Image (cartoon, rainbow, N blue to C red; front, side):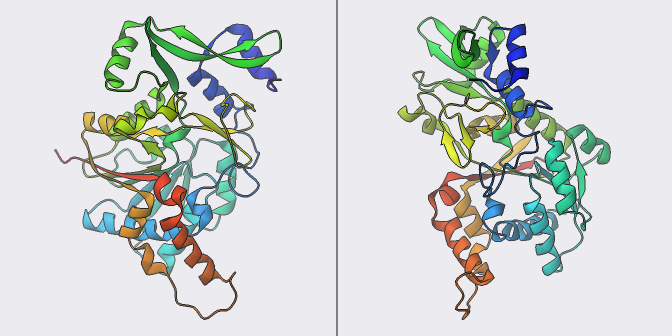
Amino acid sequence: MMQSSLLYKKFEETNWLTMEEYMEHALYHPIDGYYMNENKKIGKNGDFYTSSFVSDVFATVWADFFVKVIKRNNLDPVVVEFGGGSGHFAQQIQTAWKNSNSPSIKYIIVERSPFHRKLLKEVLVDTSITILSSFEELKQELPAFRGVIFANEVLDAFPIRIFKCKSEGWFEKGVILKKEDEELSFEYKKVSNRSLLQTLDEMFKGRNKQNELEVSFQMIQWLKEIYEWTDSGSYFFFVDYGLIGDEWNSAYLKEGSIRGYYRHQIQNDPLAYPGKMDITYHIDWEQVQKTGNQHGIETLRMDNQGDFLLNKGLMLLLQNTHNPDPFSIEHKRNRAIRSFLLDSTLSNGFQVIQQKKRTV
């Protein structure tokens, strides 16, 4: 039984929604949206964990790396984090900078969710961090920008559209409401827009057409706007789980990568619990790279998260300790370091893509 009366009213206006339209409502509606309501999302009592919840060693490595990137490239001492969430990462960054006597760096968070902005203000009350609600606010705050952009598990939060190439042509997978039992269900609709057809032919050339194919036009548009706003020399770091090239042609992706997370359990049905669970998918890193290249952005490298953290000095944070308490801070951090290097999800499940805007 569908729980959302507002979503039900939406189906009174139309009998078919694209997956993008459904996700926009289920995730971002001011009242119904999962990210917008006041339910806890991150941590033990939420639906998923982020790396900063595992340990502060994640942020400590990034804090040192941000300083080095800014110094080596003579950037403006500004770091912009998109999607600040609970504020754990930003708080840990500030602590790491303070403990290492790092030079003063302005830190800005852009967070769309009113609930998370409230959390951020509470957690970061004793810091000089600026908290903004939109990219438009950011552009007003910084009309010119030549610094560092950081986004951890943000790209996968943009709604996607889902397509399938059949013998009769391209079809789009959308959402309907079966009136007889008020259950949400998927239904395909033939694509007739010529421009969209050309885009799909080009974008998914070489892909396994037996699989459902996903694209976030919203993510691509957001990347374009970010790339165009920044000045030459700016750096971009995106952390997320994704695939590239032939990795998308695997048989297990027959129904795409989209899924839900509800109380730390994977939900294969992304239509379950509308407005009450996270909906996510794997990032197509090739789309990110191509969008960047079209807007003067060079992709410097892409690493699995474990390799990135190892290369940036994670092992230097290991501590020799004679403390017999296995729950001491030292032992917890040492275990976390091993997890980032050995745990298949933390080490290989996430990737870090590093980009730079070319100097004209």
